[in-house]
Image (cartoon, rainbow, N blue to C red; front, side):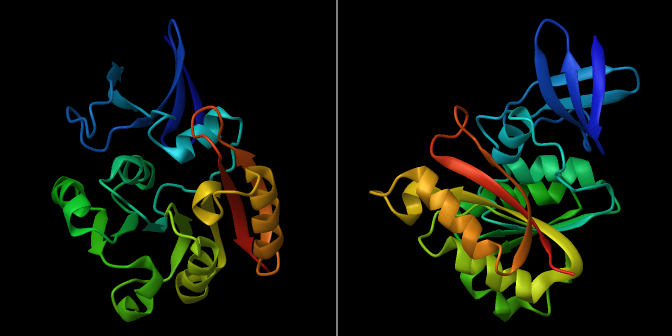
Length: 224
């Protein structure tokens, strides 16, 4: 078995096939049925690119995720916690991820996950109205957004203004069909970059096909 580091707690594991994995913060426990791989004194959790857009971006060759051990992360659109759990692995016990999910029903597994992973703070609330939670969320190193709303870019910028540190970074998953079902996805992604670069420095972007159809992630940092 060959193990190659991508960044903090993120690894490629090659046996017969190459898979992406994070070091399990809670050894012996899977979150969504993912494979657990023990090697030496560590246990790894397979990070499925069909279930996680950040994993898909890494599979597509993007390496500068900029979430590290000890990072504080604001995660908008946390759903049941699939990707949140891998972020939890990466940031470790000294990090924190504020996991925001609008749906109480969808958020139930997220809340249960946070009971086992103490670095996850679930917030069942509308990501478009987080100014109401300013006293509950500290300034963060990284903002990640994965929500299917027409005004998703506006929501991302608003929350970056509220919560992102001056030297912070972030990423937004662009769901082209959620913005405009009729327009060419490539055109929507290009227009999204043009809007975002008025506020941020664009660090990179990657289309997520074939793992996530008509999706892209745009990585940004605060302008200095």
